Amino acid sequence: MDIQTLYPMNINYRYYDLEYFFKQCQKVDLHNGELWLCPQHFLINSHFCEEPRKLKELMERYEVRIRCITPEQNNPKPSNIAARSSLLTEYTQNYFKRVIDLAYDLQCGIVLVTPGWNYHDEEPAAARRRAIVMLRRLCEYASDYGIVLAMETIWRPSSRVAWNIERAAEMMEGVGQDNFKLTLDLGAMGDADETIEQWFAAFGNRIVHCHFVDGTPTGHMPWGHGARSMKADLADFYRNGYEGGFSMEYVHPMSFHEPERFLAETRQQFIQALYEITMKSEKGKEEIE
Image 1 (cartoon, rainbow, N blue to C red):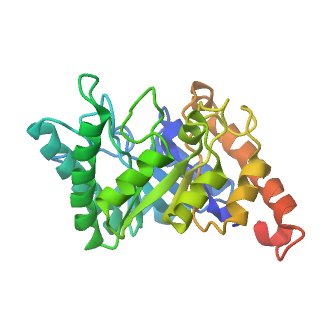
Image 2: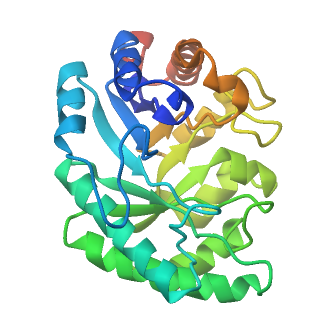
């Protein structure tokens, strides 16, 4: 764990040009990021994909590598992992295949997925079964490209398909593919009243990515604006030998204005927290930075 495991994410730069996001990453000397596929930044859907050269040029110009791609998904988006109609099932499958192709083209090893959302006129178990079938198919497709699908849980107000450790384990067993891994979203975890230690006890090194956010306990807030302790959370990851990235998935409305300020604040807090955690071990502050 060092400063380059902190990943800026363009999700709270949605009202800015994509190049502005890349510029800000370079400005604070962060060289890895997560790309949210919103249409105003990069247009891709079931039938069309922008030329990947656009992203490659930005990555090269600003020396930022995309480590994880997060497609648009869940209600009310048409791409729903647990889609019920044959039309939307086909649309979703084709969309994610295009995203996997894009990830391969960008040499990005992780595509983030969700369990999808259930309809309110059915039992969540029915949607869960559909999601397992969809994710198994997509993992089989992604395996040919060496791409990992990393599923995050979704908090209960949005979906009941997989909102906690128990349901995530059910999904893991059902999909049963080696390239099916997990993203630990601290917001969803907080909603389920779970802990980082519980997640590592359940899944260990199958956790390959983190949506690293503050909250009360939810809210996907920038760090320092909620009730979580960054130092305590990072200490849990460090103690469990976590080797993935920490993406700033800031979706609280406060984060949409002056996103560069929250990026700089988080970077400073991250360095200080890591230093305090590791200063009695093998790393010093100069190694973290």
